[in-house]
Length: 255
Length: 370
Figure: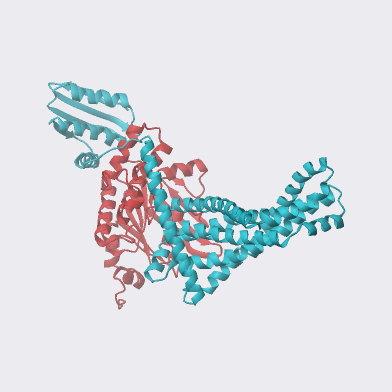
């Protein structure tokens, strides 16, 4: 899919809860069409960073520029436009339990487009087919498995053909096969739709199989202590923390 | 944004030119599909060499075209089409799909009646089972073998005693005030406004105090029980208790039932007092009845039987509210919607059962001459 240039530029961003600073003055860029992985140990601020990128939590200081628009100082209208061009897959799928899968996916289409019912039904069906859930239109979230919920959540995130899709711990709670399926799906969406993908995860298998670029957050220094393609980071780790993380706690390297 | 196509020698060529974002031109789509159906085509070619931006709405059009080609055994050629667009169209044709339009709800009367009957029977069975478990837990409490944390009971007691004093006092005072006001309007016509004191004293102690406390506590505490336990059900905390071999009626239900059953009669005493005070405010300040006179008539009207009947109602209401709250919490579904439903049902059922029980108790006391 041809899109206008999409890039996320984070400049000197600080995230804090009251006096407690979680991340300080971090800067990075996400290129158009990247599968960008935000990784780091538990408690380093990965999910908080995602919440700032998606506009759920305000930044303490710094800028987040999405598609050339400063998201942190944008007015309501601009923010809404950016948010409509972004899809988010939450850890649990966050499907509305009182709606069928079709109704869940149709919701953003009904809210933000004037498409006729027939076209909406067609698009819903397409999105479900894309995530491998063709024929599950009339199922309720309580009637499907955890992995299916995530895929249905992804179909909803893709409903408005977003330029960027954010994933919060997509593999959490999934068995290895379902996790691999979801990873393949992320790559498929990235390649088929040209969507920029931002993934928060600490699952090594996912990081290496999908990531084209990444940053490594560190809780102690409250900063980025590694950046680049995950496979390259493994080959040439910038420090012991990144090396240990990417090798599941292997012995520290000796200088 | 339009769908330009030409038909020549049983071959259809669809030319896609420019951007196709949010393409919902049903007429253009119908014209294209009509052409596919009407001409005895051998092949369909998609020329996307001048295609600009596109989204899923174009995939929907091409899917329909591809499906028709497949059904009619026509050759489909993708000429200079972006590979990702081709992949999406192929994927959509490949899988069996069933686009569903929103359906109008359809409830045949007999089916609805049958469902109601079945669900009523299931509720009776579940309710009876729950009451049995509660009774067993109560006996375990008496025998000292119950698995219940004292702190849970104390928290529940705190929640339905001093934290409820404010709202119970305010509402009861207002009810006493209204009772006196309404009574005074009628009694004044006979010059018998002094009997407002008796009316309020008897009315509040015998039943009004208990009913007002019951309604307040059903909305306040009963709803809270259903929501708390319902959320525990959603978070699988109840499953965890069950797998640990702990009876949920022991651990979650009993502390709440005992706390509310103990506290409600005390709240009824408070409500009686505040209601009488509200009546006195009207009598003394608005009807100019001397305070000593009002006090004398109130004391004359107060009767231990009425007072105990009120307390008995309080005890029964306490059991009803806590049982309803806990029952709907325990049998709550596993989603956010269910917690809301459980809370509503807990409050509504508690109020309905309180009214039903008031009728039954009144009838029994009438027969017994109490």
